[in-house]
Length: 302
View 1 (cartoon, one colour):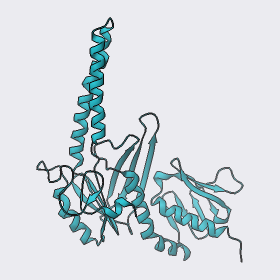
View 2 (tube, one colour):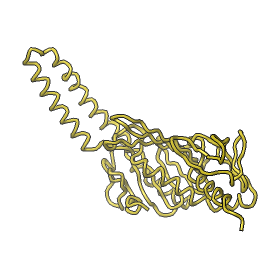
View 3 (tube, rainbow, N blue to C red):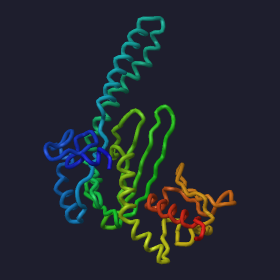
View 4 (cartoon, rainbow, N blue to C red):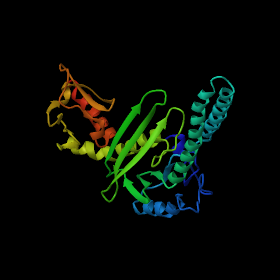
């Protein structure tokens, strides 16, 4: 359990951590109705009704950071100084460029703060046996033992590189709930509808689902059943897809990288079982089961 998971309890404090009892988070108790306070009783009721257990962590919507705003203010000062210096030289016409950029910075600050206010109505609470998520003004409840999780992670490279996260979970009513987040190299950026620290809550959800569903899934497969994971399936003896199947003893490696689940088959350049990560429900559970069967299948007979 991470430090964040062990310390979090109750309301968000604006930093990504929960805080036990007491005051609400950054802007908590808002009179404008955008805050998550109005959902707290519903969250607690839903968690009790579904017997989700103790609260482990809280992740609010992304908020603007003081560091990013400080950089913006610094940018205003620098651009203003450049424009002033250029206006008093022979290249006065060039002062138009920094002046134009100078007008963009205040708008960016306003937009980030406005987005932060809107995101105060978002919240993910992780519990022992499930989670609640406030999305689009509604509290959704998810149980780890019965949910399905699809993940889609895209890394954007370059100077302003960031990673976009999207997890689609099935709630207790059978509906699909999309949880989105973004991790930036330079710190958290407020973006509408995004939850903070997806690199923490995403894996935490996948791992919790694996712990809850692994015993039953392993038992079902050992008794001769077939488990379906989107386009892929597995049994006690083999793994396959619509393009064919491979016995476990022929598989050298199974891994998920660069958005693809790759099954390396001995003696073949490409096997028939590769698939996009975004199409594999409960990816962590799939990989855990597959690696167990692969290892068992390649053991020499006693």
